Structures are given as structure tokens and as C-alpha cells.
View 1 (tube, one colour):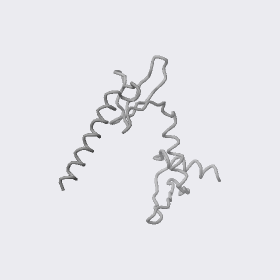
View 2: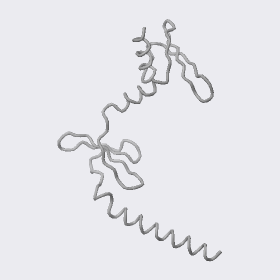
View 3: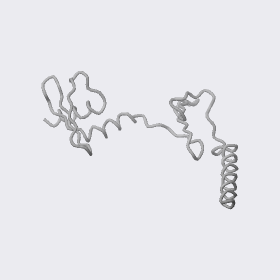
View 4: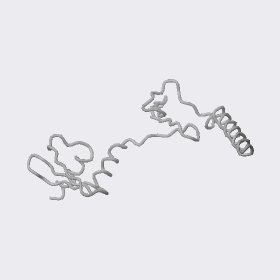
Length: 128
């Protein structure tokens, strides 16, 4: 019992020392600029002097800097639309999607279509 306690204490001290060292040095000296805007917890957006937009994300391994894809939402809508089946129902559009629990069905007015539903409707309309 005592040996387990000593091992656990020693392991936690080693982990704490490693985290302190990682926090002190950061990820290659990378830091979030002062004028960056926090978009969501742990994610910042910053435009540099040349006009490029950069995202900074806090990860378990330190801070990561990357350029966001301009069409992230468009890609996700297209991927989600690939699983939707849209059919014309007059003023409404009928949608179907296979799920692990069976087929999910719903309808939406054509004027209210957004995102993946709109992409699926465009794909179904083009196929006529």
C-alpha cells in the first residue's frame, strides 16, 4: 500500500515538472498576439500586418498556429449533403437520411433551406 502511494506521488511530481517546463517554454516560443480575438474557448483569430488571417489553437501539446480554410462551412455542408436525399414536394422539400436507428424523414419550405439541406436540394434539382 505504501509502495503504491510513493509510486503515484513520484509519477505525479514528474508529470507536474514536465508540464511546468512545457508551459514555460511554450511551443517554440509561439504566443497569441495581443490583438487576437478569441473566437471560441482555446481558439483565437488574428490578422497579421500583411493581411493574412491566422488561427491560434491551444492543444495538449502547446499552442498551434495555422491558416484556416476559407470555405470550411461550405465543405462541411457539402459533406453533410452527401448523406441527404431530397425530393420535391411542391412548396416543400422532403428530406431523408439513413441513421443507425432507421431512416429519418422531415420536410422544409424551399424558402427556409440553409446549409446542407440547400446543398442537397441543389444536387437533387440538377439531377432532373
